Length: 244
Image (cartoon, rainbow, N blue to C red; front, side, top):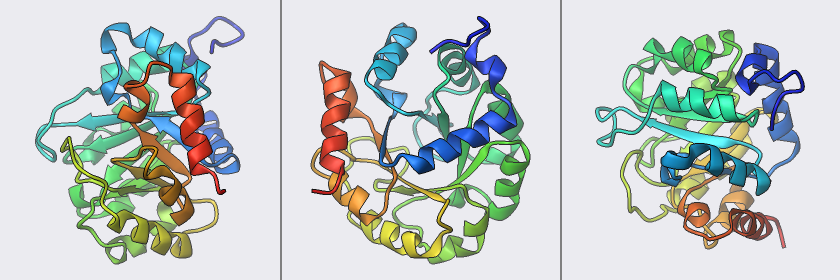
C-alpha cells in the first residue's frame, strides 16, 4: 500500500494519522492482527504484501528484550522496515523492562500503538500518558497472573488493553481460559472507545470465545503463518470469530 506522492508510508505518519488508526480499528471489529514472530524475515516485503492481500487491518509486532521475558526478538529496525513497507497500523507490543526509556525511539520508528506491560513499570499511568503525548495509541498489557483490579486506576489512560492468554515471552503454551474472564471484566470497566485485545494461543478453536468475551483485536500467529494461504486463513478466522 503505497503513498500517492511516492514517499514511504512512514513519512506520512503524523500523530493525527496514528490516532486515526485507532478510530478505524474501533469501527470495524473484530480484527485479526498477525503476529510477525513467525513470518519469514528473510522475505519481509513479500510477507507484508501477502498479509495486505489477505485483508488484515494491522500488524502486531512483539518486541522482547531477553530480560523482562526470556526470549530475544527484534527492535526498532524491524519496526522501521515494516513502516517503510506498509501504511497498515503497527501495533507494537513491548515485552521489555524499562519501556519508558524507548518510547520516543519506537514512535520515531513508526509505531502507531505502543503497548507496555503493567508488570514492567512502577507507574503505568505515567508511561501511558507519555505514549499519548507522543501521538501514539497507549496500550497496557497484563499477564495471566496479573489481576484486572491491579490496573483499574490506569484504565482511563488506555486506548487499548491487551490481555495475555499465555505468559508473555514463552512459546508452546496452551490458551489459558482466565483471559476470557478478564476480557469480560474489562468490557464492563473500560470506556466504550477503549479497544480490548487478546494474544496467545488464539486460533480456530479459541477465537470465537475471545470475541464473545469482548476482544476486538485478535492477535494470531501460527494459525496464519503455518497455513499455505494467508487469505484463506484470515477469512476462516474472521468467520469463526463472528457471532453465529
